[in-house]
Image (cartoon, rainbow, N blue to C red; front, side):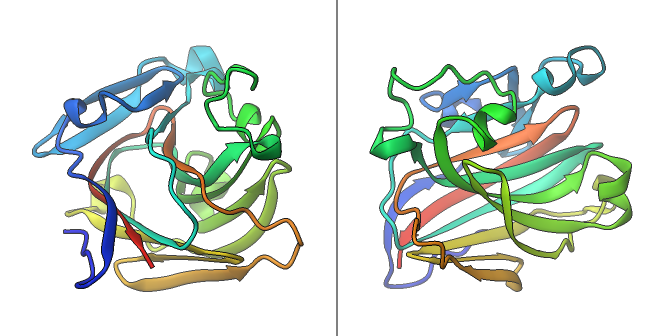
Length: 223
């Protein structure tokens, strides 16, 4: 179970026990929801063989968070291939809200997120979509807009066929610092010295079809 540290202020908690727990989240793209035991199963509703990059999706938690937070959740890959990532510190250019109607429509197509009119950090932590990713597995942190690879670490997550239980993932975002770990194992830590440090914002899950994966126990704590 994802651990919340004693004495910390919990800003948001969601058991992710089924589709009802994300009924108020903002879906962009062909998302399909279901249950995997007491967890939320997420997958794509379109065939990526037919629809290519337009078969992928993003789903946003509707709560805007401040800077200085720890995000934790549990993840279990169910069926490959595919890719999973988390967006965080996400908002529109120029301080606009992520869901401002003045921003371009987003439909799950990846370039809309990494080179469009939103700013965000995103960690891709299950990169099993393409043969080259499976042959040398890494977790990547990118800063957008601009799709800049800013940090990288080894990926300890196994193929879906070898995963026997949920893995606990954790992102820390505190000013210029971003850090990522799985099951308590630190995978990277990065300091943004660019002069354009991202602050608070929204978080969202993204998958590349045809990945099926289960999620549970999302928590956001104040540092």
